[in-house]
Image (cartoon, rainbow, N blue to C red; front, side, top):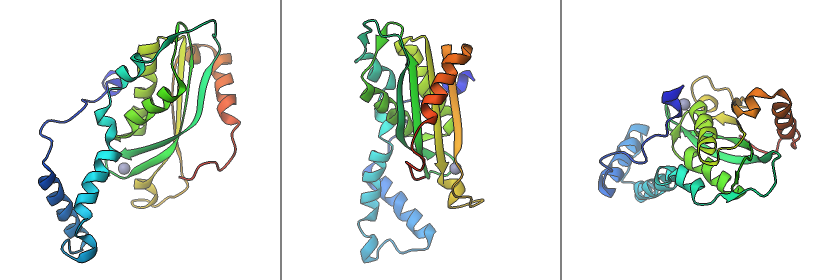
Amino acid sequence: MNSISKPPALACDGVPSQEEAEAAVRTLLRLAGDDPTREGLRDTPQRVVKAYKELFGGYQVDPVSLLERTFEEVSGYDEVVLLRDIRLESYCEHHMVPIIGRCHVAYLPERRVVGISKLARLVDAFSKRLQIQERLTVQIADTINQVLQPRGVAVVIEAGHQCMSTRGVHKPGVSMVTSRMLGAFRTDPNTRREFLDLIGHRAPGSLDF
Ligand SMILES: [Zn+2]
């Protein structure tokens, strides 16, 4: 699993120019069977290029320094910290279509705690890239483990994959669940059960895939 847990490079070499990127979008429009010169599509390449920068903004964020900048020494709190139902928007690296779901992140602080918004930002930093759900889960858990050095980390992601719902086998409503348990969440059944109970008590249908 070592190769899968390594964060990818922050940016690829040879970032294309605006013109090259817009030309690529026009090629895909033609591939779809449409005419890139017609009125409604004239500004589409420019908009798509702009949208890509936002959708894949995770490549511009260094997840480790995101957490490193913000931790505080813990003052006696040693119970589970859980951020539940973090909205997750990622993109399947095989088809470049959305993976939409939610992520639950928990850790048992040893010496350091981090602002909860930083955990949500960490999820974004890894999810706003081309991903597979398994690697995304591992990267989030391992980064928290590496930077905060807690007694344990647990990450669960439940998500729907549009490459499965809108194409291919066409199976909407299916969600994929992945988890990564480290430290006490892996070795102590009571700690793991507490976490699973906590994330189990949520309102049904709180998120649309
Ligand atoms: Zn896919």
